[in-house]
Image (cartoon, rainbow, N blue to C red; front, side, top):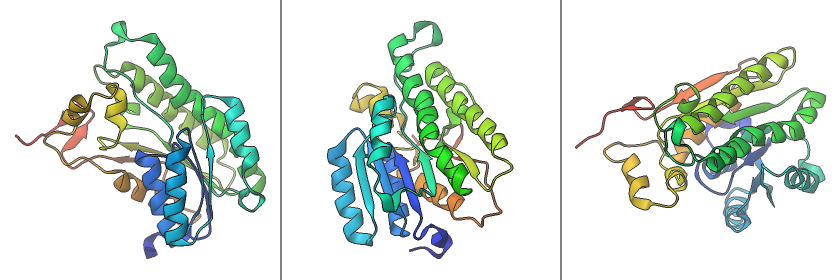
Amino acid sequence: MSALFAGLSGRITVITGASSGIGEGIAKVFAENKSHLILGARRVDRLEALKKDLSTAHGIKVFIHELDVTDRSSVDRFVAAIPEDLKNVDVLVNNAGLALGVKHAFENDLDQVSQMIDVNVKGVFTILKAFLPGFMERKKGDIINISSVAGLEGYPGGSGYCATKHAVQGLTEALRKEVVATPLRICSICPGLVETEFSQVRFGGDQEKAKNVYKGIEALTAADVADTVAYVVSRPAHVQISDLVIMPTNQAAPTVVHRNA
């Protein structure tokens, strides 16, 4: 356990999209620092393997349940299934999200755009609706929305994804202002290039295209982003880190990247 993240010990953390990538990375870092976990994702088999690893290695409580953030009934079942001893959630990490395609705005596959909106935007609203009332009642809690540098700057071929992440930024800012009179802390974390399954999903499973996204650069890892989440949540109660941008050293913007030959 890191002394820097000592504030995580004993806290109860919900992570959506926890079966891989950044979500899985956050689960691992929080588990290492003795946070109890509530993990949701569609791929329950992966969650089961993660639960086994984390609960055995770190002696924490880990609850897993199938979760599709685009399905309100799935969210209701997820919340209802949380055990009594884990219901007083301290941290919510809205991580579930995806990008699909790289077409220009006038060429976009509207089914893909709808799917991104359902997961990246509506999904965040649905999860917030489920957990925020409890945070308000208990007068404590941290809400972390995993956004993207695409939420700060649009780029060619990313109109659909950028639109959804701009929406997450707007939602996060509005929410922070709405709860300003409470002890709740609201943060958006905006990663740049992170080498996970993200690009494989974006390119429909094309491994070569996905690999080229990170070619010639040391991209961030899921663990790098997880460390920033742990840092934000473990600050003293009077410290709110409202927005945090994290990029590889050789990236300065979504499309400004220096690649080694």
